[in-house]
Each structure stands twice: as structure tokens, then as C-alpha cells.
Image (tube, rainbow, N blue to C red; front, side, top):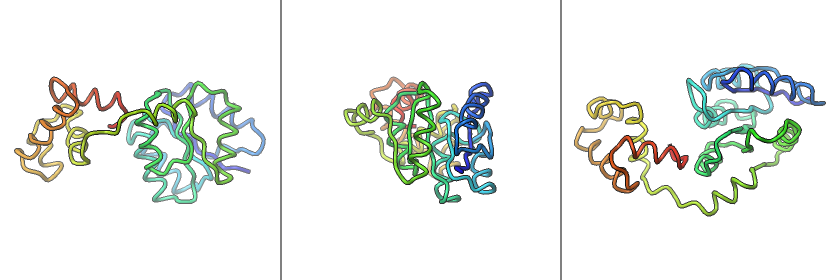
Length: 201
């Protein structure tokens, strides 16, 4: 029996997943949540075989949760399920330790097959997203520029970003300016939007 943890913040979608996947032979849903941080806690406590994580969740997003689950509950294999066809997310998911990446538009039978495949030690990557990822340009931002842009995403002032990242305000301004230039954006808010659209944030 494959012990499954489901993390999806939309109640109707999560309920459908629980009902459809719970009816699949050999799969038992042992936990469910709508928050990424709760998914990490449940993975540690319940020790599921596979965790299905949506990307957009409060607490932690699915990619951050995948990274922590891979580290804190290494016996649990992670499958990312997303409605966003952003190839940048695929690269980040694989780097975070995810074993599967599948679109929400697939039927439950496909997701069940992916769960079994990943549980048996395999991988599954949505073919269309894989093709897009191969042709997509690499993120031009350095890790520090990404960190600074991520910290700026909520509209925080430079002084707060500097404190959060333990940098000087001048360094933060330099990183933000560099990110804006590289992304050919009008300002840091537009740079955040562009980086998110590409799946880099």
C-alpha cells in the first residue's frame, strides 16, 4: 500500500484528489493539508511514501516544501502538481528533489500512474513542460539577485530587505538595479512579475 500525503490549498480540488486517488487500488491517503509548512510537518510525522504538492500554497510554496521534505523526510518522494505551465518551475522542482512534475489538467488515472512510478523509484516529467524547459533560456540572475528580488516581492523597503538579508542598503540597491537591468524591466516590481512569470521566483 502506497501511503500518500496531499497538499493543495483549494478545498474542492483537494477533496477531489482525496476521493479519486483514495479510490485507486494500492493507494491510501494518510494526510491532507492546504499549507506548505503543514505539509512538511505532516511528512515528518506521518512518514508517507509519496507527497503530492501544489506549487501555490500559503506558509511555504510547493517548491520550498519539496526541498524541506526531501531533507527532513528523505523516505518521502515528492510529486509537484501544478496548473502553471512555467518551465522555470520544472527546473526548480527537480533541484528541490521532486521526483515527478505533472499538470493538474491530467486525469486522476494519470496522476495515480505517476504516484506508482515515483514510488517504485522512477521519475515522471510532463512531456510538454520538459520540451519547453529545454528551449527556455537560463535565468540570468545570480542567486543573490534572486534572493533580493524575492525579498522585494512583497513591496518591502530597501532598509527592511537589507536587514532581512544581512546586507547594506547600497548592496541591496545594486542587486535590485542589476536584476531590473538584466530582466529589461521598468522597475523592481515589474522585474518581480517577469521573474515569477518565468518561474524563477
